[in-house]
Image (tube, rainbow, N blue to C red; front, side):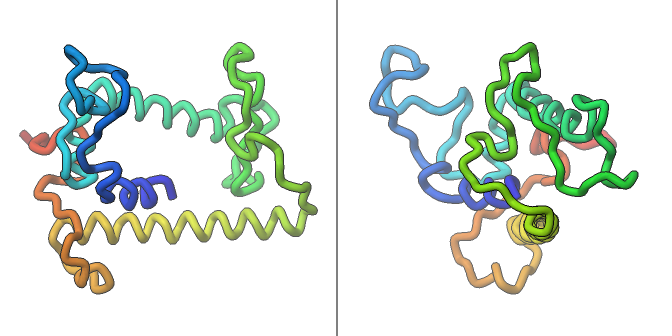
Length: 180
């Protein structure tokens, strides 16, 4: 779901457009607007935004997501049983207190403000989450397909839909190829 919502958010002028910050976070000689990262180019598609991020920034993002995935797949909890081996689908082990005590919030329910649910509600919620994830994957693939110039009927009517000339399956560079 993060990929689908991220694509939608990155297509908006708020994210893809010019950035002018009221204070200097990072910039040379207090020149405004201060870009969010070195190499930022305004008014480009989400895939071009990814292409413009420095390689070390891409690695940081991928390593962070990989760490969360690895922990969620049972690397941080010995009692965890993977859902393909009879465990609970949609379960993410608590992360509070891990990392040498530096992590103070759980990934799921970080503030614990929602009321407790019985098992039937939890089971239904997990199934809804799995179905939402499947729908988000279909949605992201349709957005990537349309931006690559192929036909996706509901999206063809949007005139300002962001187009991308690169290869979306090779994320590190617009001209990188495995076979070159």
